[in-house]
Image 1 (spheres, one colour):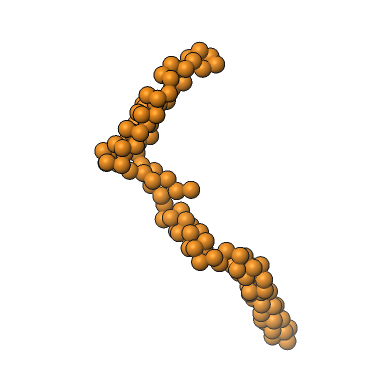
Image 2 (tube, rainbow, N blue to C red):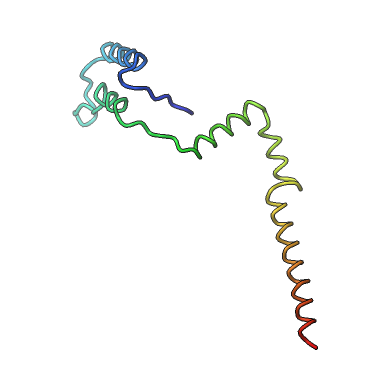
Amino acid sequence: RVTKEVDSTSKEAKSFLKQQEKWQSAAPASLPTVSGVKRPGGMSSLLGKIGSKKQKMSTLEKSKLDWENFKEEEGIVEELAIHNRGKDGYIERKAFLERVDHRQFEIERDIRLSRMKP
């Protein structure tokens, strides 16, 4: 879910505030709560949310969101899941490279030890 943040002085924000005022004026103004105290909120909390500092999205979060949207648009979510699970997956390749590196190290170690004995 992506939320849209706008400047509090923009036309869109003002129209949203007008809608909120209409909804609040249509609802009964003084509804007592369980404790008998009116809950904080309404226009002041809405203005606080709109006027507050905008939360910035990091590059990593933006990239992740873009990648998720791309996968859904292209319809490749299942294909990627199947591919990564199989023999050609990233984890399987890394494990293969580690095994090869370990074998190569053992071969080189055996050669070094055989040269040192005489």
